[in-house]
Image (cartoon, rainbow, N blue to C red; front, side, top):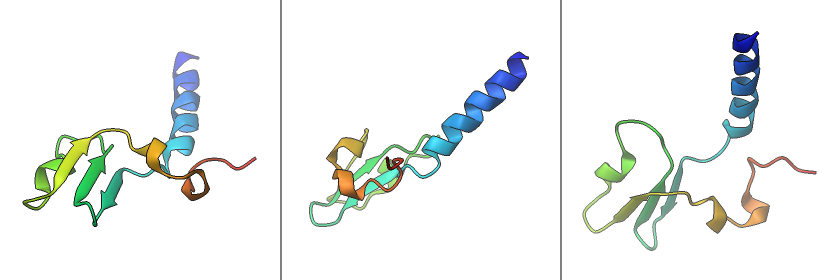
Length: 72
């Protein structure tokens, strides 16, 4: 029973998060934000002169560009 509930919860969360972006790149400002959860961090591999941070960036994306959110 617990395994089934856990699996359903996991699958539900996967569906919601499947299309959420992991990276935000601003080439003009030489900026990279990452929400990629893995041991190898993208922020460690940006070119010299770029700024990179592991942080949530979803709030800076305009609502009309948020393709991953469910539309009402």
